[in-house]
Picture 1 (cartoon, one colour):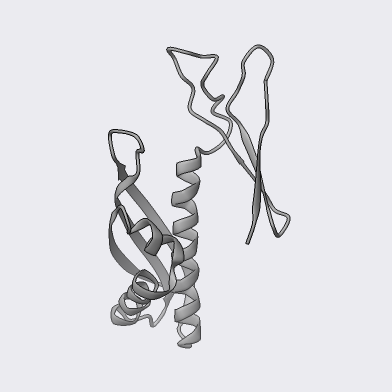
Picture 2: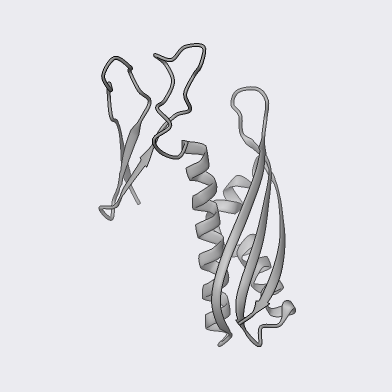
Length: 149
């Protein structure tokens, strides 16, 4: 797996902190930094997600993918899956994630809570590379709700 990340450069009178990532599969992802009120020439333009937000989104996508895949493989009638992610970061650099909570909402027909709970646990404990990696610095917790379709 590979990815190339390039700075988008100056934007008018501001240096900007935007970056474009092109993945090995040819997809593009744009990231930007937060504006800096004290040093506007050093901050981002708030035109895209922050790199750390992108990490959370990737972790959410990774684990949601697993959950849907596990449920489908088990012949469950899953029709929707979303993950609400909240996090906390360390106050000092490097500001790693220290806590991450993943709340799953899984929609389907005749889904049992036990089956959904098992799918989330399998993702969390075995399959999701992103959350397993983030768990090296962060306490990761999960919760879920099942919604009938």
